[in-house]
Image (cartoon, rainbow, N blue to C red; front, side, top):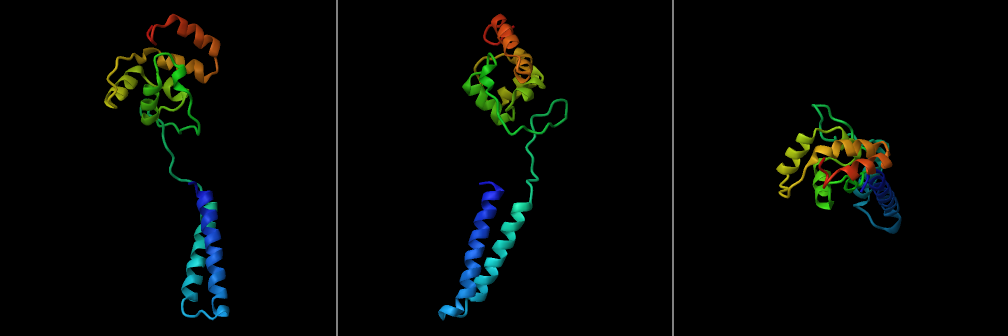
Length: 156
């Protein structure tokens, strides 16, 4: 649930409680209306604040030479890179490699170490992944196809 949805829920709930707190005495119900009114007002305030608060936590992509790069809101289909299947794609996503650009800016040795540390035991060779990812990130699909035609299972 994002902040906007939560804010709207809190505002609506706050408005309902404020109305109940204000109308309670008119219905002959006394004693609890102040508590309901205060809780309603607090929910309204929190809901309104949530509408104006931007998320402060940002996810960072894997580091390349110590520099963190902000994550794009999208994920790319990494299985378009020869040598990456659905299982490897899932592991790469979990490791923070969600876009072609994140793979393009990573050393193959780093990829090898990270994927092995994640418990992937099948043989794989990420040597060409950054080069393939660079072409994919640039949208150079014909060049990527040409490169992949020269590869064998993702290997040069």
